[in-house]
Length: 464
Image 1 (cartoon, rainbow, N blue to C red):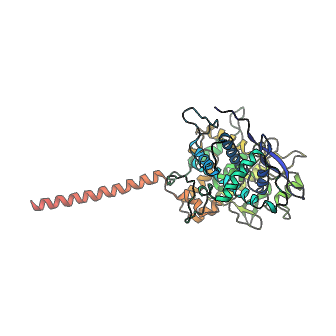
Image 2 (cartoon, rainbow, N blue to C red):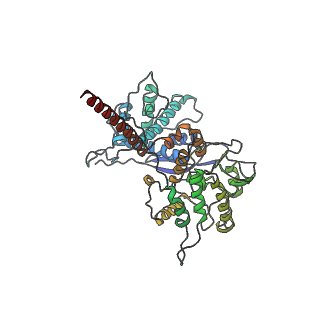
Image 3 (spheres, rainbow, N blue to C red):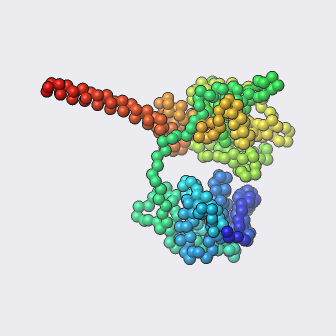
């Protein structure tokens, strides 16, 4: 096993990118030679990307640097190095129990490997571009560190040959050119739609699973957890979307309850004058939860860029299905705010609807823990493949619409998908559907053969 004296790790640093003095907390790559300056510039340009995207970009560059360090002197051309790097992502680096490289990478799922390659390709595209116009840069590069020299070496080849691994993530395939590095995969068609939370168990989950324990055994139902589950199961929300709701986001308009989910930064604030990022900063001194550091702040919430249906407010409405579920939600929402919601203490105010026992915003992790305990409490096993994780409720919404005969466009709108193809997973026949259909066809086939046999027998008897 090799021992390396060079390494890299991720840190979150506060970066001032321009004269406005606005701060951005971003993940950066730290090596034994210091900050990877080139990547800092790149990640700052992508500061509006989601935190998960930024973290994935950091990880991808770390993997590339680790592979370069482990293979010093083995490759004369970047093309050969990238070929082996891509192979290592798909196959791993361990043979038996040995790994001379010292990386000890396990084989990754193809979709994960392709995402890593995509991040690296985008970075080297950018690196090649800025280096190609170095004479025009207002803020020239300082002398490159050893790690940066390796990346510049790769980018130079990329600029010259334009033959890196783009084909592995490019959405618009080129028909007039072929890449040198190719990874072939088997065509697949998923016939196992995401597992959904069992409808017949939902009432038990809400009434018993989320009931607080007391000395007498049965205490009051935890309305906070019921409401969050209700929003996912009957409103198709993701957990992060449900937790991002402010108390002002639910209104009664024209006799109907309206739930709006706003973009965490650009959504219209309750004062109808500013966006939510400005409102949070000016009134509460808070950052939007999607801008918190995921690795260290439990209040971080992701944002999946759903379909925005109200551009003026920068939000989308929740469409309860069945519709009567919206009426029940309104009653539960009122009872929660009147009886159970713990208000923030003075000096710790915030606008979020769902709070913990101390009045602070409810976290993603705490709800998942409460949901798992509730699932186990009613006798169900917990797992994604079983449909009993929180996301299983959103999938239940899609399958319920499909079972009711909803069109793809209706499912798309109800689930706030940007693409019509995103609803295909809910209209795709399951393996059980296919088997049942084949059984029906087999019955018809048997009936046909039986008729033919009778006819053949009749011919034989008449000839006799």
